[in-house]
Image (tube, rainbow, N blue to C red; front, top):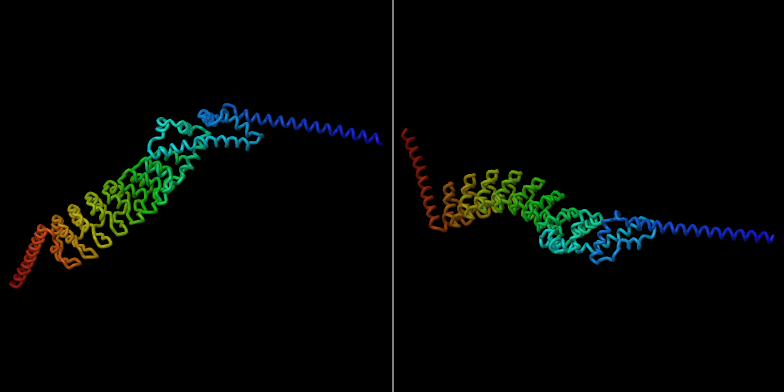
Length: 443
């Protein structure tokens, strides 16, 4: 029995030893296989055709003394521990991190400088000789490794807000730097990003007359009717005010509302163009459907402001476009009042010919255009008003007639002759009445 147990134990020992040996051999084989697989991954990654752009980018950093030689191979050796894609992805992320660490700031800071100095990007490639910047600029569009990384840099930079709330896109649009704008839009920066006052890149481009940038932004999806929150200006309003006809035309062709009002005083693009004397823009806006008699908050119209500022051609154009020559603003002035006040005799003549009420009185004080011209000493305008059969007997708020406030002897002489003519006409009428009565009595 004892011998039998000894034989059994011996057999178990042999089996256990054999099993352990088999397990050891198996583990060794697995270790060798795992190591071989790891080496295969490394060898495959190191092949010339694989990750060539990333390797070239790292090699460039090595050439600048920013990385140790064989940096890509070293990353593989340090991080590939098993046949796991996640591990290899980690290698790529670390390699891209090295590109960001050493290339991002030189690239972006030079773009900031290009924007501020308003010089083409190539200037900093050719003249400044910044190797890191030059490398990124020259390779970012065809280097697979750099392309998406640079997009991320640009997107983050483009969405950065400075102390005044502006962004690189606003600054580039204000300075007319199309290259920078293209970089930012291609990177996915919002074309309609707004400053605290609501201004957009399109607003700045329209303000400064950068027609091609306006085109670029609109083609990039810019909203043409965004209003500033502080004064209500749209891109169309500012372009009309500044006299940029081609921009006005392009904005309207792409849906800009020609009758949108500023929220501060109610001015429209037509009013702003008329105010500044931009006759071609006035002509275009009228043809595009701008309301000729739309009033500001104080009820002034485009005709009123054109008459005030002496823009004869615009006054004619607006009247031809159907403008009402007798619309009054809040205190009762008409275009004829304001033209008389500023001494614009030719505009007074045009308004009278168009049917302006020569006897119109301000609602606040009863003053007529004749009173204004008399006080201001504008003899030519007084003469025009007298020739239009103005009523000489209208009294203003202080009870005085126009002739009583005349400032010059010439104007007083005009009134004297007008009164004489008035008396002669009265006498002639009375004579006709008398003669008719005589004839009637003799029948």
